[in-house]
Length: 413
Image 1 (cartoon, helix red, strand yellow):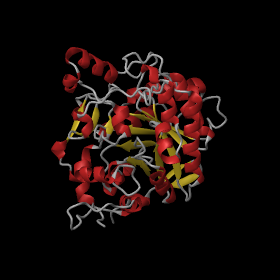
Image 2 (cartoon, one colour):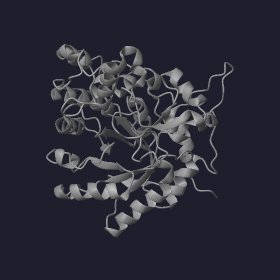
Image 3 (cartoon, rainbow, N blue to C red):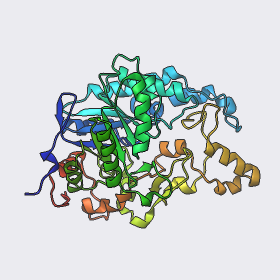
Image 4 (cartoon, rainbow, N blue to C red):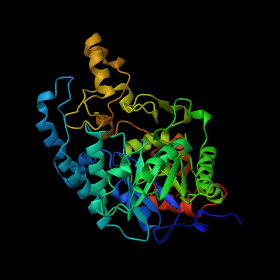
């Protein structure tokens, strides 16, 4: 008899979980509702802290974006954003509010984690990162997954928090070398991660690879990390991610020694996902040739996205006063610089020459359609309605399909 993912369990924190983790997708694509469904069904769901003040404004009716924009309105028309800063007290308040409300609603045997991106430098990389980490712990998050960066200092930034050794803490890496660097620094505070997510080259959004990503494959990296940990005598669960599209894909990794698997693409188009309905339909409609890996992100990382999304062709004035999540400590961002350089060279009509996208604005408007490699397969997972649109599935349906399917079969609605 073919094995099912349900035949395995991830034993962690005194629990036996369904070994299925829904990855963290910003900006609020991984909604509270999506994460809570994963927890209710016995797995792990992530919320994302990407642009948390803006997300909290939408969800809870706060006014963090408006207040920040008003405070820094004097620098709106110029290229110098060195004076634009976040008030860390507001960042903490927004994070606590969102996380606390999520945790208060949690039901079922599973867990809710926070995905925390190091590349959200927020004009003050160290202090804003520390604030986000500690505020999530304050609010009772079950665990934190460190993503989009090496996070060499992240454990030290929260080492004095009362829940530092109680909450589950993990790191996303794309190589054994990156994990080695992280573990070396984590040893200084005598705290190993509780799990390691190994993200392969077929993952969505920002990638830990270069434009030569096709030279790599998840299975090889997964095994490389497992062997490295074994050599070091470390018993840390390894969770593969990126391109795990069916329950059978997941079982293959579990049989190879994975602690759990992390998935995301199939959940982007569920009812609980934060993507607007029309964008979900664009994901269903996508063909393989519509998906590209480019260098448009101001983070410097390659990014996988649908190449016809509005962010690619629509240039916008930088909104650093309201957002500014990718400003470095001196108020610089590669999109900001590219925008004003293009303006100087040819005026507003020549802004199409900007070689970056404004992630803050386009992510906030759901115009930057980052995606996993297998997004073009989403149409295989559902049926078409009489009007030609694709039927939207529930997160429960997709979760249970991963959990109980065999033979690479996909349960249609």
